[in-house]
Amino acid sequence: MNIPRLVIAAPSSGSGKTTVATGLMAAFSERGLAVSPHKAGPDYIDPGYHALATGRPGRNLDAFMCGPELVAPLFAHGAAGCDLAVVEGVMGLYDGAAGRGELASTAQVAKLLRAPVVLVVDASSQSRSVAALVHGFASFDPQVRLGGVILNKVGSDRHEAMLREALEEAGMPVLGVLRRAPQVAAPSRHLGLVPVAERRADAVSSVAALADQVRAGCDLEALLALARTAPALACEAWSPESALSASPAFGARGPGRGPGGRPVIAVAGGAAFTFSYAEHAELLTAAGAEVVTFDPLRDEALPAGTSGLVIGGGFPEVYAPELSANEPLRRAVADFAAAGGPVAAECAGLLYLARSLDGKPMCGVLDADARMSERLTLGYREAVAVSDSALAATGTRLRGHEFHRTVIEPGSGAAPAWGFTRPERRVEGFVQQGVHASYLHTHWAAEPSVALRFTGAAVEAAAEAAEAAAVAKAAVVAGHP
Image 1: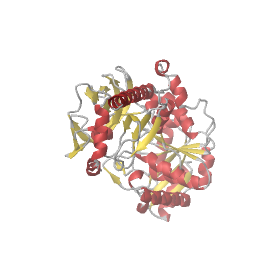
Image 2: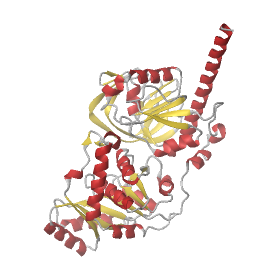
Image 3: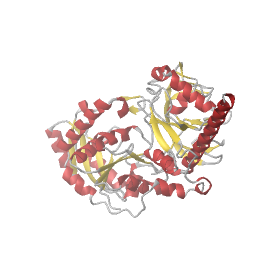
């Protein structure tokens, strides 16, 4: 496939990648182009702004969690039928998984996609030195094609002239100049930007302002021309159906169907649970499930016919009072888990299933209490399932990511969910009845068998519920001829 594409990178975090990438996505979308938004790395928040800018799901490209071999196929899946793809990088251009060289870096993603790179440079405290900085990034890895620079936080016309002169001497095209504009910055808190779902009206305004800023300061025609120099990718697009059929578990499971048809798998959403990868719902659907979203802040019952429950990441600590106040739903979740229903909970989901969060009652599924912490837990993990669960068979290996400022005590149950092998050896999480709860964020495209296994567990739960309902109905009929 041949999709014009750009990778937006920077020398370091805080240089303005999100500003430029989101602004470009919105500006090109406003011109009528179908823009495919992507984010290198595991971040969940930036893709929400990308989706707002383009009207398409923001998708992650993570060479650590999914493996380098899946980066191009996942990109091709998300970008199919689009006129342009914009990939926002992670950290600095050459920063990747700690101690793993280029693995999971923006540079590796750019090389795997054979995409030109645009370097966003915070020029606020430099002039001629910008040429040395850019030269270093351009020459560090000859396989990374640096196609131009966008200068951010430029202070004045004179400052801009000095920067342009220096970069002209270095032979590096300047594709855009953005002045300082704090009014379009998105608010941040303990884990980064505030997600779109929590500030949608303001986020719409912010994205529109970013589009205006980028349109005024960047050469969109030159950027589009650069994107069109990317060669065709020689790979098959990933698809959930083909991924499932290639899984060794497919022969045993196949797409899940119960006597009542597709099992309903309820997925938590709303402002408190915003972290999810689009491929998870696609895999569940391809595995035979009907995926239905519910909001634990607003809905007082699980969706009708729920036979599987997925509670992903987010910010329950911000909404602990509201989540606690929704007692009917907390009770429904607890009853579902007590009946053996399959539950997959990651990070925020783990906290929601706990007995309490910052002293506020939660669902009480787990005999554990959670609280905010001063310490940030952040990093990639290599994990192996140490207990059989509705999500993973013992021995299943996955790579994942931890990202939280909370702790839960105890940190694991009698049957832990995962054993971490790197960067440290420890067990973590809880497996009890149908519940699999852990801090670890995973990307199911790396191991599609988990979607098959979970959907199969939902089919079994639906069948058991139907059988129990039939027995109860028969008892009523027998007692009341």
